Amino acid sequence: MPRTRISIQTFGCRVNQYDSDMMRDLLAPSCDITDEDPDVILLNACTVTGLAERKARQAARRIRRQYPAARIIVIGCLADAVDQGTTQFPDADLLVGNSWKSQIDSVVQRALSGACGTLASTSLGELSAERSHGPQGRIRAFLKIQDGCGRACTYCRATQVRGIPRSKSIADVSAEAQELLEVGFPEIVLTGIDLAQYSPLGGCLADVLEAIASLSGLQRLRIASINPSGITPELIETCATQGIISPHFHIPLQSGDDRILAAMDRGYDSQGYLDAIERIRSRIPHATFGTDIIVGFPGEDEAAFANTCRVLETVGFVNLHAFRFSPRRGTAAAEFTDQIPADVKRRRSEWLLAHWEQGLGRTLDNRIGSSQDVLVEEHREDCWRGYTHDYLYVKFPSDQEIPVGSILPIRITSRAGATLKGVDDHRIGAS
Image (cartoon, rainbow, N blue to C red; front, top):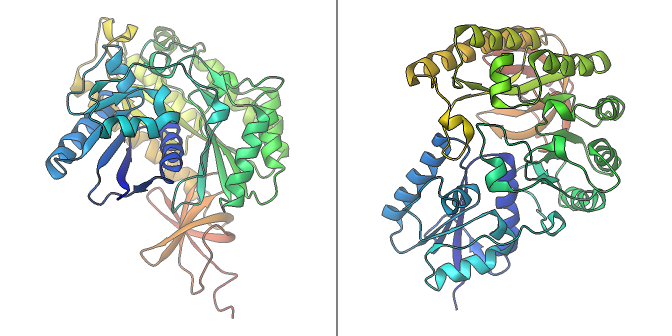
């Protein structure tokens, strides 16, 4: 009997990427994971923004035209939102929420047996049951240690579709990290819906970082994203003393205006955010920072936007995700008055990115002439490519074959846009 052919397509955050890897591992023993003539297409879809939903709908329509006989399953946050009545998705055969991801083999069998519509959500299981062997063809593996959110920011559906905060035990995280190292991943990135809410029994985020940092074979450990409340003295000290931990901190700002932050119900003001940055810099002077910013939140006037730009310039982020506010049905912000016109959101977003790129250019120019340890990820277009320890993108030529996953000192010679260019001095001409 031929094996079922399944294609998995992922939309959204790093947690979704981890979940897709987990589902692939669960399905691989009994199915062929392939994009060629699939019997089932699994769309692990996001509902955070209208754009994310639109991409999933476009994919479903394209799949329906290309593979009319295939069964389309939408799983995850978007399916939960459909089940809760806050959005619609007519282009799927079966919709199943996040609680079904660890039972994906059962979901596929139901779809093949003709099940249609929306499967009722089940109770969320323990995170200890969720494991991933990492993505295929990559050197960086995401490790989900936390799920769910209890913040209920006024613009966000995460609390609705991801459930209450849950944490994976330090022992389970360490065991999963060890498995990732054994199959060859030199870099591990800890991820979750809100890592600031990571609270395993008898421990904290700093404790799990220390546990993983001690594992043999690990070359880099990084925190994917963490809200300001998670920047504790213990976390900063652990990152400062464990040299294997990347000194890059992605801390969502969302807005630099106190009035807008209060309307978002973020739980901090702009000075509190800057204080968190300063606490890190005072202990880790070479740290770099990334952030998320929502442009055009209801009530954001020019003065509020200017405040966001001032924080952007003060911090000097090396990584920026700028999102135009997208009203999500079922959230408080969708009902706020003083919604911002689309053309204003577009203009502000474009200006913000241009302003950020200027600052990034100055930061990168300061690296010219320095030597940076680069974790090599791939060889493409006659150049080796990878990231520095503090998460800056570098490409360089070399006349030697370089093992992917190795760390090399690269002398930075120039910059092209957001990319540092360098020379592999110590290997050129070597035998």
